[in-house]
Image (cartoon, rainbow, N blue to C red; front, side, top):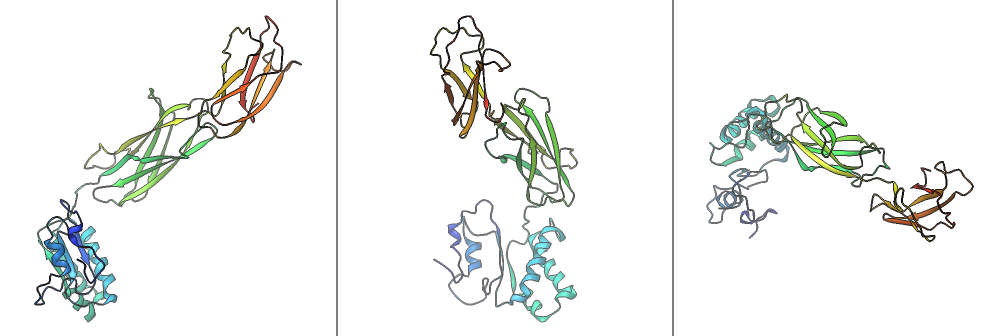
Length: 335
């Protein structure tokens, strides 16, 4: 079944156990005083067992579009702060009293409109009205951009979605970031961002530097809202969350032959591995020499373009017995 308006049947909504308060400002949605066996939209939503709404505010007659902004805006102000914590009946009644006493709404159209807007439901009910603030942050709301962070970057962006689940405050709140590595409590980096006014949800952004020497591996980035515990909250347990982020090295590390290995095979193939198995296609440089300064006439080098994984090279040289050979690898821009 449908209605004159583009609304689904209230039975299609699984509202239980948290039923909404339905505000409808279209004409005749609550036209309940006519002698008809057909239920109005408001009646169907109120009487639905598992769907619909707990209460309804709607017009029982025709209205005027010019009066809607004033009525709607002030009704939300009554819910949000003017009559915060009071019953739905008191908020509905006080909104009408405010409109009738305000010099901004003294025309006949507003008087007619306020008389046509009906409250259907239990007037003693209250909507959720917590007495304290309740700031929250969850792990799914933490993200690194780009998602694949490597030491080739000097920094990355960490985004944190923060919520106000309790009573709204027009005061500012601080969000703190602390960086540690797994298995250590030493804070490697810290930063704080102030949110001027968190009324519902917001996203804070941190520019986090990368230390190519110390940050390789699993890093922990802990974000805490109201870090200074300025506010007395409903719960402090949801103020902190941690993002575990693996930072890959973009280096190419020699893996075979190992350091100080003794090799007897003239056909030895040098093997190096990217520490990031998902490294994109890039150019690497490999060098071998008989001096650790890599400045003799026997020095050989090559450039190999490869994606992440194992990079192989067979130098075109004849190895001499009892001679120490040094070899090194790196992204091409480093050597």
